[in-house]
Image (cartoon, rainbow, N blue to C red; front, side):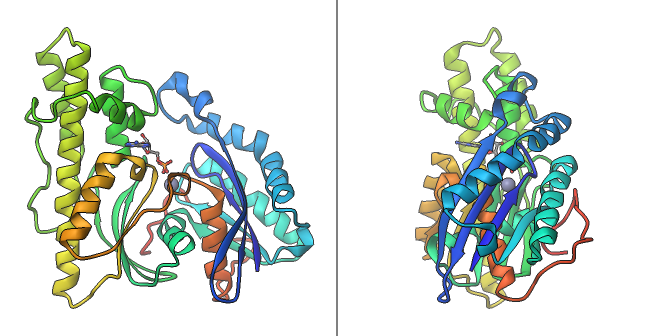
Length: 342
Ligand code: KG4
Ligand code: ZN
């Protein structure tokens, strides 16, 4: 089976073609990702209106390139998948409407994919992972612990009460005068820093419910930065390292709590999976590796280019649904909000 997948929920315009064989093995035939990073950089964050317009400008060319690179004709497709949310609504409308038009013209099934579901299922494309597993989804917009039982069966067992982890990285970077996107910049600076110098809080540590809270951490950083003003390069490095140490401590504790809860309920996940743009962070990867060993669970992290937003994950999630006859009508609505377990 061959599927075209379209992703436009945030600041990446992406289209991909994936092939799935009868044993459930997926092959990426193409995965074209065009980032709008440069358009948003002057504003220090994603501007929804600019994002929507940029998707309109490039999506047809991105799709054409994905089809050409996959070396297939539209007639060979078994369907078209697009993110139908959650995300910035202007962009979601662009991608979903385009997918509907192609579906109508070709008379092939449409699959409206939940963007979070696509992140959640990517590990099955890259590692052929069996259900069930525990997913830590960490991106600029989301921080969730999700128990993934089957296609369409997700239980959110933890979430953030305020900022997403990626957002906390981005805000920390902005506060310290580092470039956007903040995650990679904070990670780079932290390499030369002392993680013990600033005693930052570990919000939610030890709490019985595996939720996150990141906004207090951001405030604590601002206070520490003001205390040492005028801030030096070493101060910035030490603050970045201290921030990363606090975040990794919190992640380890929250994930461990989630696994404990599942085990107390008699549920045994097959693996720990990390997905989303923040999964690129090496300190977070390291702490998850240690945790996985101590919990005696395999750790699965898709390659960075499949952790950040991409069309391949949408095409793959679409295939997972198509083989289960889970297709959608042409009047399905785009959704700015769309919780995984709703
Ligand atoms: O999944 P993603 O590409 O987009 C969505 O938010 O959906 O994630 C982007 C987020 C940004 O907040 C960015 O700062 C963060 O992932 N990020 C990182 C790293 N690389 C990207 N955060 C920490 N360390 C990194 N190396
Ligand atoms: Zn995403």
